[in-house]
Image (cartoon, rainbow, N blue to C red; front, side, top):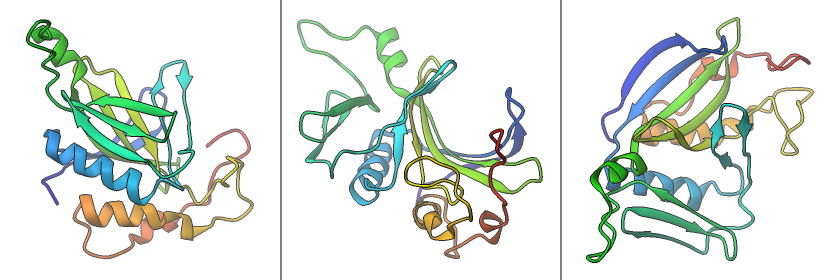
Length: 195
């Protein structure tokens, strides 16, 4: 487990509240983290970039066939479907080196694990998110949510077993010493208007 920095509960621009755990951004750390998540939890995560005005939420079509690193880019390959994510130094080639400013923009500059809270202070969302050098979202990985179904519907009753991925990630990457945080199981879920 690497050093994480916790940022206390903050109010976001959309009025929600979040607890943010800042993660190291060293290439080796991010590569290990992403390999772990996509290798061990590919069946249950939802991922894609979330930007103002657009949310891309994809499921892995199968277990990744390969996860490789080349010139700063991590590539997660599912056969024909794949994505590239710049988590290291993108040097380019000898004949076409990547300009310094572009290298800085492409590379992950911020990585964090986030818990989102409802108006009563109970957790209702768990995710990993990465941002590039300009602060633009690169990737969001949503961990299974007890208040949602696999079909992305609102569950009639919370399914606390869906927090197993979050519990695993929190113990492995946030240094949690117990397998569960009772607060994660204190929420009532989403109302019909959202959260």
